[in-house]
Amino acid sequence: MDTHHAADPAAPGLAALAGLLADETRAAVCLALLDRRAWTGAELARACGVAPSTMSEHLARLVDGGLLTRERQGRHAYVRLAGPDAARLVEDLAARVAAPARPAPGGLHAHSAGRALARGRTCYDHLAGRLGVAVTDAMTVRGMLRQDTGFALTDDGVAWLTDLGADLARSASSRRPLARSCLDWTERRPHLAGTAGAELCRLVLDRGWAARIGTGRAVKVTPLGARELASRLGIPAAELTAAEETRRSPSA
Amino acid sequence: MDTHHAADPAAPGLAALAGLLADETRAAVCLALLDRRAWTGAELARACGVAPSTMSEHLARLVDGGLLTRERQGRHAYVRLAGPDAARLVEDLAARVAAPARPAPGGLHAHSAGRALARGRTCYDHLAGRLGVAVTDAMTVRGMLRQDTGFALTDDGVAWLTDLGADLARSASSRRPLARSCLDWTERRPHLAGTAGAELCRLVLDRGWAARIGTGRAVKVTPLGARELASRLGIPAAELTAAEETRRSPSA
DNA sequence: ACGACCCTTCGGCCGCGGGCGAACGGTGGC
DNA sequence: GCCACCGTTCGCCCGCGGCCGAAGGGTCGT
Image (cartoon, rainbow over all chains, first blue to last red; front, top):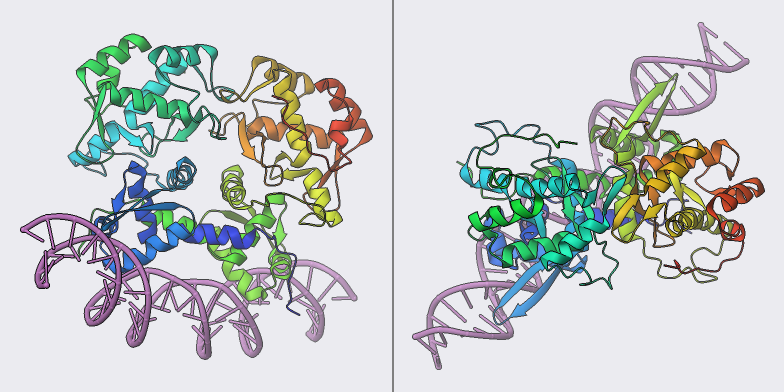
């Protein structure tokens, strides 16, 4: 008989899950896929600097582990994060590790792409960066979001989003929470995620209040969006455009 | 020059963090340490079925990675989870993997220790198991906790906990949230965590409303505790003792 | 039909790291 | 002072797995 000691039965599963992200290339893949787009193996191989065959094996492991899904279209095989749950796992772990204490001028975000990402981006399916944090802060100040005793929309917040045209019943069948906090890795501050965050992001992009920059995660508030959001949130439009690199305090 | 591609700079850190839990022995260590006690290396080595020298190396890696802290006392070196953040990381990952679809009779929790753990236990510093879920559900029904639009205590909930003697200002200086949701790995349902959950757990144990069974994580509601909690939560005491194995629906 | 392209499989290489036992130092009990 | 015990370090073995290039199969464009 094998000496099977009283170790927690969940240990093998936990180790297997962690093992999926324990490789630098696979971690880079999951981070890249946070943009919610479907990538081909060749694209990912190029982005990570490994051979297509190597990437193929990594993707097979990630798909097999349930983190990614693959959909074949003709001669292409697109891969994307399996869903909000998988995205959240990657976000959570990444947020815990990315501690660029201070994005000093000349430092990490000196290049324009980095600055654009810091200004505003999507975090899988919701808004992040200074844009996401600014909207979240404004909603908190206006009593739509309660962050002092947890993280939940108020009735006012639900009404505001519904007025805006958000379909908050969407995918309510799943156990995904309506509102949850997601820690921003540039701002180190929480912003709105969950189905409400996803709906808000969808609305903002659909109406042209913000637009994607290029093909990545970066988004930019449009003049129309700055006007509309600022008036509906009761804040100066400058807080949303945030052209300058100043940091604001949360204004408790 | 090396071919440094545009892979996310956070990838190495993410891989390193995941790598800490990507080994079965280290995963078992972290799960064992969820009981919030300080273990010696020898104890952990015995529990995991590896040599003391092997365990020593694992612990060194975990301490170095910031997940564990070590405190020396005489010829012993005690190790414990570094704090609520580290505990949360382990909890989150473990909850995502432990999917014992149905604790059928004769199945996973057939033995008495497993049944005791399913009834009630601590999850690092807050209550979990059917006990934790029952209290959380009761608080939700009584309007002390709002789960429909996120997860936050209501003003009533804050007052109820304060009346009970909870010191909710404790460690408010840190960024730890007052209330957050923690997914239970036996019940697959959320229960109260965060500083409020920790305070509630501390109160319940201090007043003898529940007592630890043996030296592990399992806790048992005392008759006094069943009376007190039931009357303060406005539910039948049977919901807390939960001697039988029935499952209740959340009663939205 | 042919070539181009994408993905996958396979064999081979190599380094990382988890495992052990032996040896060493530090602490406390006798 | 001696021994017992705990923890750590070291050398060693070995297997897993990340990496590549070569080869094969599938799909589309021409």
